[in-house]
Image (cartoon, rainbow, N blue to C red; front, side, top):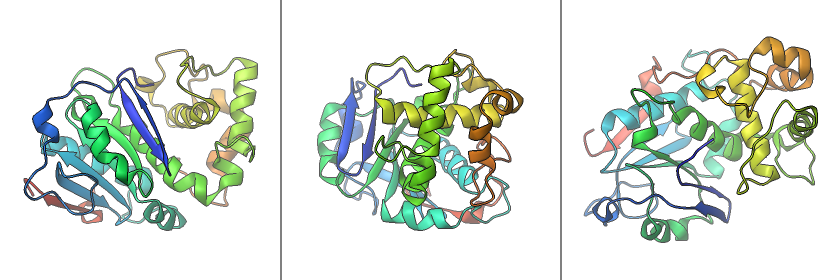
Length: 270
């Protein structure tokens, strides 16, 4: 769903496409980079439920980091009671070093080179300040953070349900293929392979289930509500509502998470 440049890192794989131009100074090494973040140019961070790390450059406004951290907490604690809804996720998120890397407008090629040594040990997802809770445009933080948690948490925890690997042929992947065959879903991006399309489908299915109209304005997902999903893709709804685990089914994250003790901030401005 991104039109801007992005990178996604899974295990040792990094996919980089048309990295956005950014000011060189944003990615210059700083005297005291925050601990636990890749590279030498992150100056502030958030740690959510001691499981997901959000790293921000000096080009990222403090309020944008806080918004992204709140969205992260809401994806993990969707009923907002202060506890992670699916505690088994935490071990996988920690083991995979789930990390959101935030910049002002996107990472330069030179910045990616600085991050490369960390790709083998961290699962990274990028998010830019200018696409996080913007005044007039769609907020991209829900999508990018959902991708990170899906890749670093849900997939390794329950591969038979959530894996994007064709050899596994998970329940989710079967639903993606069915949706494409029936014309309910179409993701026309030549850089997005079947694994990528499966995770995009999971996100858009979740958006339809939780009524995020801002994410459903295009025709990528043609089922726009929980009722339409139930009618046309009832097995996808069963994946979301399974009693065997706790997938987020309560509310769409809005960046207003009430249990602030679940998030720890360090670095510049904190």
